[in-house]
Image (cartoon, rainbow, N blue to C red; front, side, top):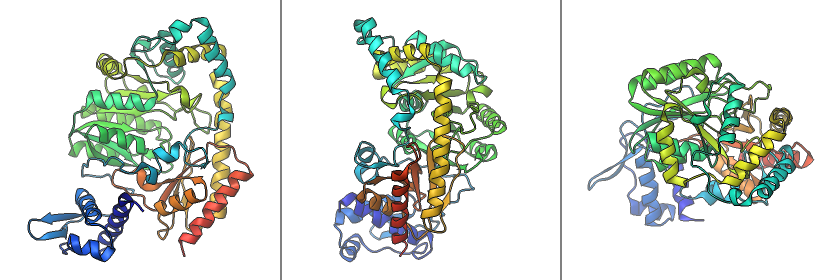
Length: 473
């Protein structure tokens, strides 16, 4: 067992003891040497565990005296309250064990960890033909640099697609990027400085937490509620108490909940941020994947280009590997483009040419209807299998779109432990604590429902249920 995993497990055990009152406020903790001796761990591991708890505000070091539980320890997380203490996210230290980078790249696992559609649900053959045509048409152009902002014909297609859901976008606002994550990272780099406060949802996609951590920002968390999304009143409460530079939100089918924020709430959210001078960075990655078939509005619909920057991608609807996304910059287009130019010069030309060719030849809406139906059917079948085969007491969020399922486990089951047990059986899932800045949701896991429902998938979910039942004993 690695030192990283040892210190994380020790910190988690002590965190629970503090939150439950087993270790009381003001109580002196064992010395580092005694902790190492009692737990049979190295001094370095003991130091790491205490430093992690100190960063979280749960304990404090007193000069020449040792470590103590803080007099006002942080409260256990509650889903219905916004967080009023801005914290800096901690970059992931052990991706192989936490199930992010190493697990994402593994091909030997049942892919319940990967929030991407199955290849069979995407127009792979048609895109391959478009790539071939783009290469044959002019290989020198296809393999050369293009303008940093992206090819005009592709930017026009992106603007036209937003126009279909009631959003007026000038193609000159659109900046093509290497996926939505680059768009979000470039926006954060352009608009924030280390130490600035940003608002994120909880739970939220772990990649957004890492993007914020990379910029040295502090985080306030606002709950995203299953079934109804974001609450404007909770957002206003945070904006009134803090000088918030930016809010990075996913109003359409949040990953991992799959929740949808109402149109009325979106309008209020945009108005509240505008009133406080807070920039809204919208992650619209899953906006096209409504199970109802009706594409919900992005936040940009309720803005005039002043306060909302919308980021999106073709990754979840056409091809993850092409890595083509965008940011719609509004009046900040010039400074965003400057950051893009200095960062990656330009997005790869060949994928852009291939997409221009594909979109000119094919009806994207037809493929999206098929994809939405498949994902909605998968979500329903997966969810029922969880309720049938997993322990009593689980709660499964009912998504309105996207391709993820958020599962709350009985308190006796640790999400990280289930993740590790699943890996040993060749099944990929993600533990819930990855989806919170504070490491909350230790009794949750996230599953993807992007793969077609079949007997093999049902068997995998039943195996996971058996593993969860074993962890309850």
